[in-house]
Amino acid sequence: MDDRIREYDSKMQKTIDHLTSDFMTIRAGRANPHVLDKIKVDYYGTPTPVQQVGNISIPEARMIQIQPWEKSLLKEIERAIQVSDIGINPTNDGNVIRLVFPELTEERRKELVKDIKKKGEADKVAIRNIRRDGNDAFKKLSKSEDISEDEIKQLEDELQKLTDKYIKQVDQMVEEKSKDILTV
Image 1 (cartoon, helix red, strand yellow):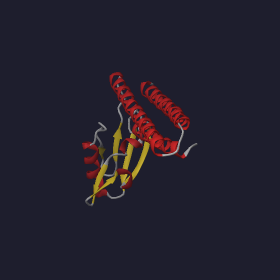
Image 2: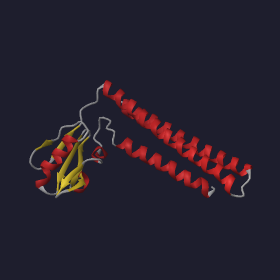
Image 3: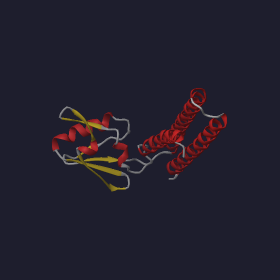
Image 4: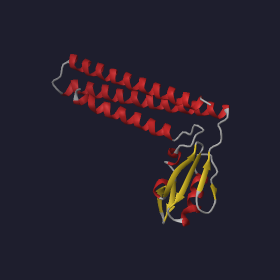
């Protein structure tokens, strides 16, 4: 693979990685510790990820349990979860915090699938923008360097194949995640 193409390949791969991490934070009615990834707790004045202030476990299919390493953090963790957008109220028994995930309603599942498709479309647009940037860069090359039109055409074709590959991957990811959400 040409170095000029490799640069755009890595940018497109980052877009896929971003989508993957986005999909991990979408809850599908089962306990998934990744829903806590974006939640930060005020730990002595520093916003710190929940995973770094306590032990996170999944004792049941629809429950996450957070055991803070310091009891004084219970209230902070509880507050951080309440103000987050995960939509689950934590229960605090003085030792651990439990998050119980309710069964998703049919309506909520359909909303989540719409959200998944929206994220997928946004990432496909990002991939196409990377392709456009690449094509623009190749056109500039033809003006500044000693490179033939055939070579430019070949680079553009390679970039298009790469774009098609990543668009197909996004579609596949959206389909799999949608299927996962809609499965009761």
